[in-house]
Length: 202
Image (cartoon, rainbow, N blue to C red; front, side):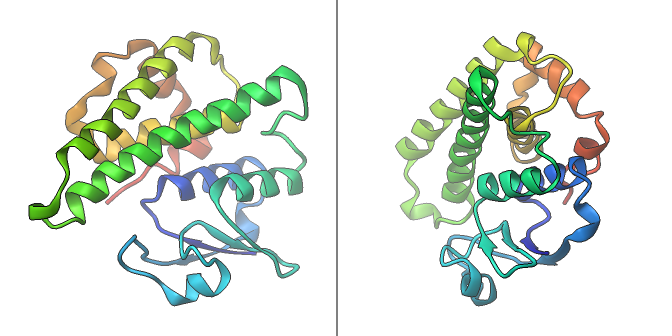
């Protein structure tokens, strides 16, 4: 398998954690590609019309995207450890995945607005609206964190990657000061080998 990736992408990090947890990391060739909303990579676009990472090329010729699809594919290939098969546990894990991914989506949009968009045309109300989603997500994660336990599934991986992205790109926010239960869970979860080894750097 081949994975188009960026080393700082939190969505790629989700895939990397799942690959490690399922024992498939050594079976994936990683191809570093720089992509952004204003820098389309035609090699990635040849397999994924959205031209985004992560994109996985499977051994049987499929191109899979986005991170949710790739993670579920790898988990199925690796024995189905991280996606509960049915019932309340499945819907809880999938909803927590949406919570983590939604936090990431909003945080990335704020970063793009402040980092990529020229200053004269930046829209403060847009950024503030997205940050309200970030705060709302943090409040919900805090509310649920006591029930996360010591296990691992796709929902908890997604939330950990979202919180890790805040640590990486929004360090001045110091979210841990206001969401102490979530912070304590994240600190413990980050000690897991698959999570610790994929912390973003740069």
